[in-house]
Amino acid sequence: MKTIHLHTFPKSPFYIKALEIFTLSRGIASYLIDDITIRDPHNYEDPTLYLTGDMVQQSIALGPEILKAEQQLFQEEKHKHIASVERLSKLLYANCKRLEKTHSNGKDFLPILRKELKKFRTLQNTWMLTL
Image (cartoon, rainbow, N blue to C red; front, side, top):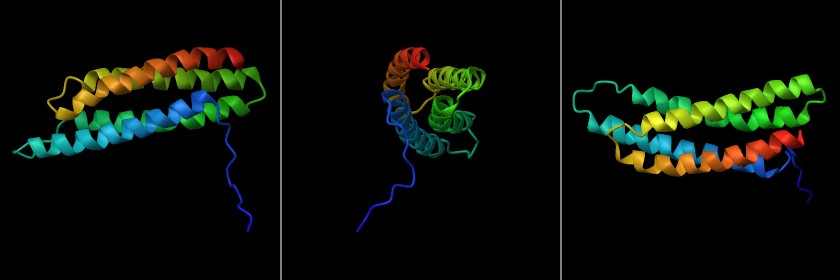
């Protein structure tokens, strides 16, 4: 029996690192959300819940933007997607720093994500040079 692959995405180290960051940020966000909602006895909504959602949205948007930049033929279009990847990675890093100020046990995992984001940025510099 033949296996049909619906998607054949390039497996560049940069794209793989983006997928790792998404997986890590989603896991950390779910842990933070569970921890933040349990800690509040008065049922007040903690504003850091929105930061966790932003973190997941930004990390999930990295992969498609990388693929779009790699698939574009014209430099102008590539630069739009490269700028988007840069903006998303900066926002993601800033949200990690903000979330480290929360009163949650999950904030101990955020330095791991920031370390991976630093690796992502070094890969990003070489990736931009290759496009």
